[in-house]
Length: 312
Image (cartoon, rainbow, N blue to C red; front, top):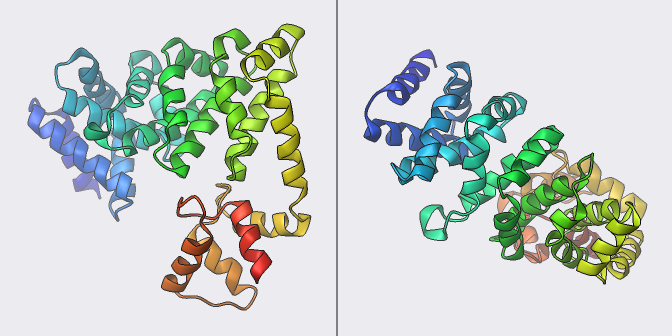
C-alpha cells in the first residue's frame, strides 16, 4: 500500500546503514519468497525510483565499505530485473552507474555468503539484459562475465540454475553482430558437453549457440572445432534424440508448459494428468513428480514427461 511504499522509501533514503540493510533484506526476502507483499514491494521500488539507490548500495560491496549491504542490494537488483519488463528497463538504465558490475560480481558470491540463490538470481536477470541490446551484451563481456559464468555452469547448484546459466551463455554467443569467436573460446567445450544433457531446454540452448557459431566464416568454424572437436557429433545425436519424440507428445508438452519454461511444474503436471482422467491432489502430483524427475530439478523436462507418458 501507499504507507508501505513510503516506509520503504524513507528507510532507503535515511542515513542509517543499519536501516538500509534491514530494508533491503526485507524487500529481497519478500520478492524472492513470493510473499503476498512481493508485488507491493516491487512497485514501491520502481514507482519511487529507488533502483539508483540500490545501485549505490550495491557498489559498497565492490569498494569494501559495506559488503553485507552491497550483496543484499545486488541480489535485490537481480530480482527486480527479472520480475518484469519495467523492472528490467529500470535496472538496465543504471548499467553505466554500476548495476551490471554489481550483477556480475554476484556470480562470484561464495556459498556461505548467499547460498546458491544469489548467483542464480544474477543469471536469471543477466539473460534478458544481455538479449536487450548489443551494447548490453558487449558491456557484460567487457566486465568479465564469462569466467564466473562458466564456473557456475560447470558446477551448477541445481538444474534450474544450470538452465539460467546456459540461457545467458547462449545469449552471449547468439547476439548480432557476433562476438569474436576467439573471445568466447572457453565457452564452446562447455556448450558441446551440454548438447547431451537430458534436460531438453538446456540441450536446445547449447545447440543454438554452437550452431550459430558454426554458421560463421572459416576462421569461426576452425575456432569452434578447435575448442570443441566433438561438437558436430553431439549435434547429430541431439537431432536424433529430438526426432525420437513423437510430434503429438511434444505438442501436448508445449500446451501444458504455460509459462514456456521448458519444463512442467507440479501445477502444470496436475493439469496435464487431469485431462487424461487422472485427478491427483498435491501430494499425488508430488509423488509422480519425484518418480519421474530424474535430475531432481522439481520439474519435468520433455524427456522425463515422455517417460511418464510411456507408462500411462
